[in-house]
Image 1 (cartoon, rainbow, N blue to C red):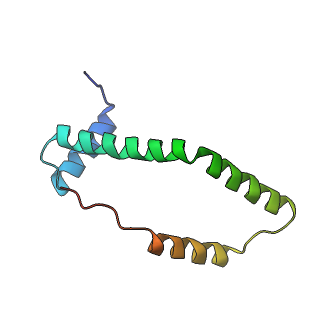
Image 2 (cartoon, rainbow, N blue to C red):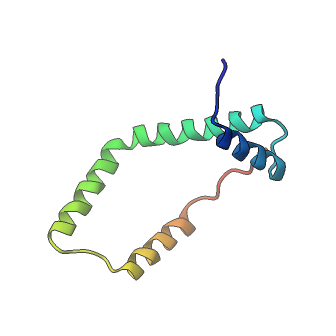
Length: 90
């Protein structure tokens, strides 16, 4: 399969290869595609749950039940710290 990238994307990939653990463009692309596939699979599996949460948030906003910015930052910080760390690159 032949894939053509815009020059600016090629430059980004080359930068990541120079500073990261990847030895080749193929290795970088393989890792990127695997990560994207995992994300898309997760989104597909949780589509209904995500839609329900969006609807719930929209309804709360319509009722005037919005969070202050500092409350949002605090909740996001707690969610991030509770999330399992990403797998180490091999």
